Image (cartoon, rainbow, N blue to C red; front, side, top):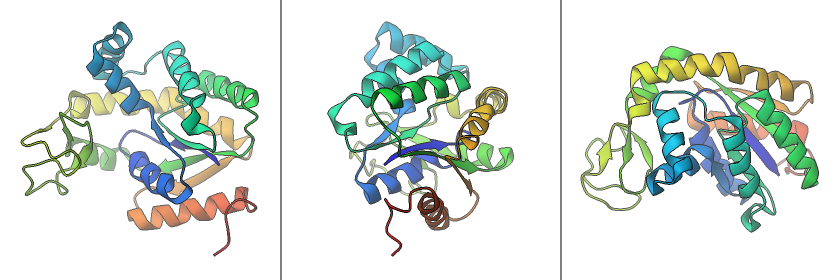
Length: 223
């Protein structure tokens, strides 16, 4: 199964991707993580991507398409994958469809998780990341912690530049103007599942599975 998680920054795509990854035993591919790793490595591409992300803007299509193509041809993606953060433009969606054809991938769907802007801003401005492993947490998750629960690093939590409210508002405007048409692209192909992201995490997961059953009844058991 090949899934695309779609929605504004902070809507909960990463959380649901991890749940789906465990359920279906397919890798979670976060383009944000890939780009941040490139930025930490200090490569020319990484430094360029870092500057763009810090301004709350989209990384150019030619950069993203190249990264995704290289990733999907990896052995770990042979039996399926979950894309988190791509495509973000109709050009990227068309390029991804062309790539799917080359890979003979037909069992794909876009899961659109919805939430209002104010809730998204609230969620993102209260996030913290680990400087060492890059894992992102809510303040509630690390309220009394000194060590990162993922890598064990001490005093490594920090507020990322792209979680500043001004940057978040810019990202949301970019999403509305450039990324929303992607939803229409997949809706026309009847490959779209829409979910209310303001529900509890468990309920969001259940509704995603229910929506996928309607598209792939042969791939997902009823029980």
